[in-house]
Length: 272
Image 1 (cartoon, one colour):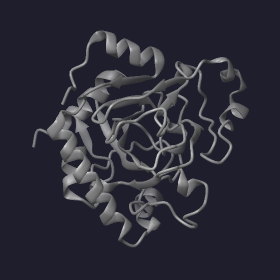
Image 2 (spheres, one colour):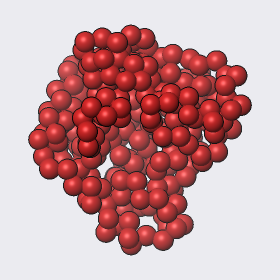
Image 3 (cartoon, helix red, strand yellow):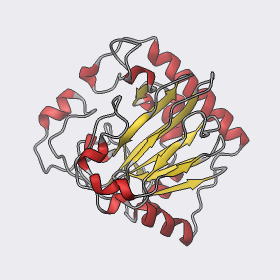
């Protein structure tokens, strides 16, 4: 894993709100991530979906709806697949996220497989952190390409620097690609940046940077495995998101989210 960072990469991430690392996984690691993710997704799709646990989440409702054709989405696979748990708890991922964010500790918010289907719809411009149960300007996500991500199959696009001026307001991922600009009209003047990358590459992005993805114009899926990270010490903001129901009901606004079963601490590594 090419997880060592240069000062220039850290500076680029903090300036733009995103960083592409080509060849993040070597050939063997990519094969493992691909097979584990495919297996974990197949297992999830064959299981009953129970939102009450805050765990078993896949696309729901009409499979022909716009959102269902944006991507197949499976969250918190580490809780249902041992191989995924091993991948996601790798402390090297946590260390890389912590160094980019400039924080001392990193917890997993949730992992998430995102498979854009053949001829799949575009992913509208949005922010990540406003969906989550904590608010942090240092939250970030890892997005690993399991297939080559190209302009033709729906690679990521970013509006550089928007993490610095973003408020905790958002737009949903719906059929109107530009809904986010109704909230942030000033961002229309920012030149979008496409981030095509080869399979095995990684993109880290800040939870408040505006991003989206194009349509998949090919007859093959575009697969990605992702993980959202929460700085250690973050506090509950009142939103449910993917929290288990019993835990959600036990929380008060302002309480530190430090349950290791729900949000594992992956950096610094445990001394146990």
